[in-house]
Image 1 (spheres, rainbow, N blue to C red):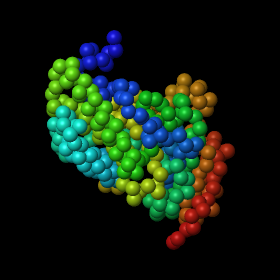
Image 2: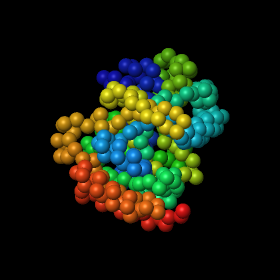
Image 3: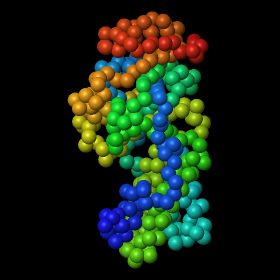
Image 4: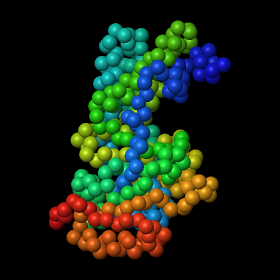
Length: 316
């Protein structure tokens, strides 16, 4: 018997949260998963040195990063959708859950997720403005051809996901989740299973909060951001939390290096990160910066990596 059938699992919010295949609504994977051939990480010389020396990426607690606007962007949109749906006749039976979920989101303090940001663009003016102010801006271009076990795909722990900027796409994602919960709620009613509105609302709010973790205002769409995200529920796969000092805060992080063991390296047939190019950002000392990087990479076993110069003109 199906362990997630209404007879075996009498709490529909559990069925909705853990069994995506039960939903009859089309799941558009292209909305979420990034399948491009390259991933580009903007950083500075210290960041490049740390990534190469450690052999992995730092995924920082998103609650302590500089840009927290995207969480509010997703929260506000979701609350608006919940309020609109609760007034529609076809959602009448589910309206109390929707209203209570909206209240939960008002007070919700998001759980920790650990994030490392990339872009699909290797030479972006907007990114240089953010990372190139000290004259050390770099774009590390990684090969993302492998879609099974790789430095980016360690399932189910992490994989590259797109940041969503488009309001229609955001709405589609939120509606898909709400419809799935509504469907299981009606099933519970039909089967006479116990209904606790607070439990339903709490679980729905938590699932929606994870959905809109990747939402961002359309004004940032030129960044073409892609993220590696690790949930707090997967921390046991890592060798504990580490901490680093930010501008005005101490930031918890984990390193992807903890996921790579000998069997991983045997599968990958190398211990090197899949770096294919370093783009040196606009700076007055671009040539000497590039030569120093070539020298460093050669000494670290990355002699085949191309070191190029940004095509964006430098403005002092």
